[in-house]
Length: 355
Image 1 (tube, rainbow, N blue to C red):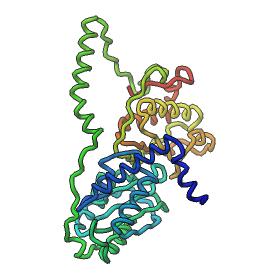
Image 2 (cartoon, helix red, strand yellow; image 1 turned 45 degrees about the vertical axis):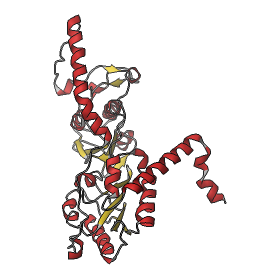
Image 3 (cartoon, rainbow, N blue to C red; image 1 turned 180 degrees about the vertical axis):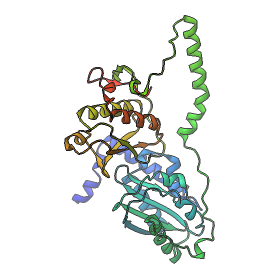
Image 4 (cartoon, helix red, strand yellow; image 1 turned 60 degrees about the vertical axis):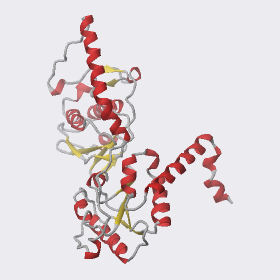
């Protein structure tokens, strides 16, 4: 009884009840959509719904693929780190005799789901980390799974761990072929709004020019001094949060140019990242050093081990990732003797570095 009451606690509040109802409706919609040769990974990717991620995605996988369709499952803790898996889509695309879905428990992003026959979806996994959990689902939609599904699941797990395999002929014949993904509603709306937004901006500029108040174009300063005056984040409304499929960039290395990555460099990095988060609140910046994720940037200074020539890595996660190259340039400057350019202004203000 105690276990049952615990599972139903979420229904005791209005927000929890409404969330559960939305989940049920979306799940029913997905169940109705997965017919014929539709792939669950493709559907989740196209929907790009944050409420269908993590544990909720795991529930859908179990309920739909395992309980309803009887897919074969293979799970494995990865034996090694794999930098790029998107090239595997070409091989999986030849396996027309079986439907495949893979779920990777990303250490930062949580559970990620993909159709391995689609390179764009696999790229969203980023770097596969050693010892993290990978689950493979193999089946034939409305047809019961057979020995070929078991073989396909085993071979898929091996390929993700870097083992070279040869698919049997039975996996190469069938109707489970990769299809071109549809754009999410958000991306389509963004493209449709593009011309209207440009027209509106042009009208604003024209009105300003008529009033004689148009601001002159800014002069590009050298990279070491290309920092605008600080502004208070509370004075500007944040941009809308995107809801597309979540992905993570590769890790980019920033080499420390100072003799030591000291407290000034740390503060510069904190202000640079705060500026990036103010511009893109839907994106998250992850910092790594010596292969491990850094939860507190101050620890890079406290350790006293990050010296000249050391590489600190970073990655950005989100659905619509932007300005990564500019972020890398600023972080490189913040890790050099030019870090003071980012320390001007009140402590509680945020620099406007990304527009």
